[in-house]
Amino acid sequence: MSDKIIDGQTVEEVTTETLEKTKTFTQAELDKIVSERLSREKTVAKKTIDDLAGEKGNLETMLAKYEEEFKKVIEPQLESVPEEYRVLIDKLPLLEKLEFISNLAKKNNEGGKRQIPQTPAKSGQNEVVHKPIGKII
Image (cartoon, rainbow, N blue to C red; front, side, top):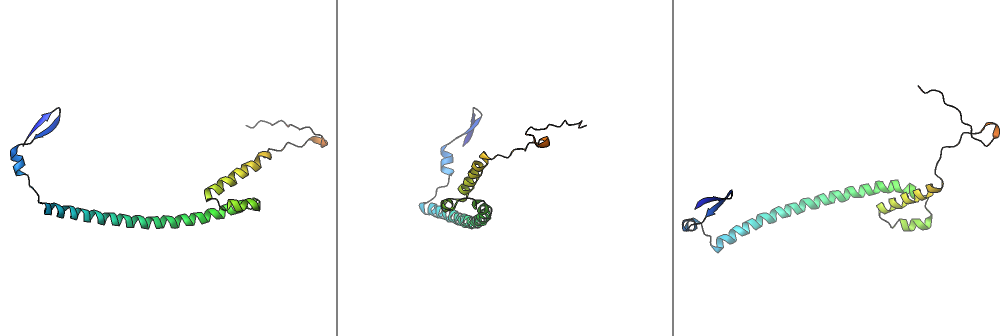
């Protein structure tokens, strides 16, 4: 076998000598090689599946803990919701409950936005008294 360089790439020329030197395998040898590789890959896959199943269990446990803590935060906020709505809200997933509570709070605050109160007027008048501010510096 000899190598030629064409356009910067090495190309091997196959000659009859190289074909005679290559090892040939019988079907039984190929079957043995394939079954050994398959066995190794099955072992690796089984170990990976077992590892992932254990990790999944850990994540599900952690998720359950977080959901319980999340419920503790949401429950006090649901006390202001009428009882007929709570039956429906209890059927929602946690994130949708949070969205509902958030939207309800926004809706309730739209009409009564907190504003800075006006300075009381002198001697009971309804006009606002503005006092000049001295130099700050």
